[in-house]
Length: 442
Ligand SMILES: C[S@@+](CC[C@H](N)C(=O)[O-])C[C@H]1O[C@@H](n2cnc3c(N)ncnc32)[C@H](O)[C@@H]1O
Image 1 (cartoon, rainbow, N blue to C red):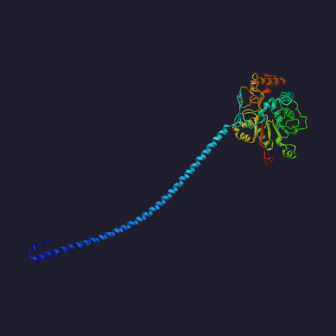
Image 2: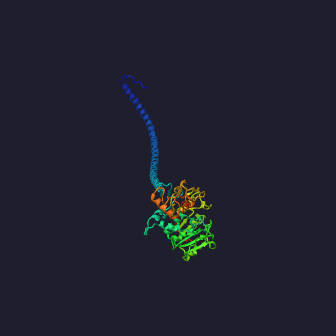
Image 3: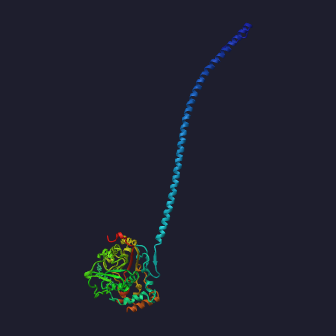
């Protein structure tokens, strides 16, 4: 500590001043020294700060770089995300449009399936469907669907085809024809030959010759191959009626050759037959479906099946398991029915002349093997009859005139009248698609 005493004189004053100056200088130097020390430590701090700052700047640079990279990555990710979103949107739009198309196609298919053609008739229980699996099936527009017009419209000579048919029927070689066709099936056969005018009819199953008689009566220019293994008719039907026309070849008895064993190729090559204009008439109680497929493969386009029994009916085991009607109707024959339906142009069952109710007074019992109409059956599998004497007076007159001409009884009480009009097996006509030539005669 510096003590300043009050000068007693000048020298003393100078001394005091000097002392003061010394103290001041000391203090100043001390200050300078202190300041310099502080300055040194400050600059080293600054140095450190600068270093730290540089480090920070460096770190910042690196962060910036990293940030830039991150921004770049984020941009890439954003682009990729946008692309994905676009792709998803496009895919969704595609899916929506596909789903709309599928819905459209489904609704069109539903409309088509709802539009399956049907034939309904007033006061008749059956509906005919252009579809497999129904009790009554048809396909295309067969002339059998126009049986009423074809038989009852007056021709140029003022007569109807039914008038002509009745004259032929009245003169049939066996009026009962116990094991053969009666009025419904004779009308079907007669109309088919009249309408198709085939160059050849192959009749498989002749028996007494009654069906040969109707074929010849319908056309005197048609060749007939009459085929039957029996020399004589079955069912005690007496002598066979033999067609005197030289256009008929009898493959009967010793000359029997099954329709499928005929030398088709040779006859076609020699132009003796033309399958395209040949009509096959099956009345042999064999496997109808297999025979139909076989003659189709030979190039035949038209087949008639007499014993076209419905489901559960048939005179023989084969009749009960092979008719086209069974194939087209029964679920157990669905594959056969589909194949048949898809390979034919037309299929139709010839309608009965009158409904079963016309035999209401008949005492005849229902036949367990079928082949006869019964009023109390459901009759959903029988086409609408040609005449409705039960509903219409004009039709009743036509029926009564026919019955009178045939010397039968319109009440159908007697056995023969009943058998003539009620015998009915859904006789059908089938027109096939043409067989490609490369598949013929292999
Ligand atoms: C129901 S009758 C035919 C009736 C004749 N179509 C009619 O309506 O007057 C069946 C005939 O088929 C004959 N038949 C049997 N097997 C045959 C075959 N493989 N080819 C041709 N006819 C056959 C029988 O001999 C019998 O005379």
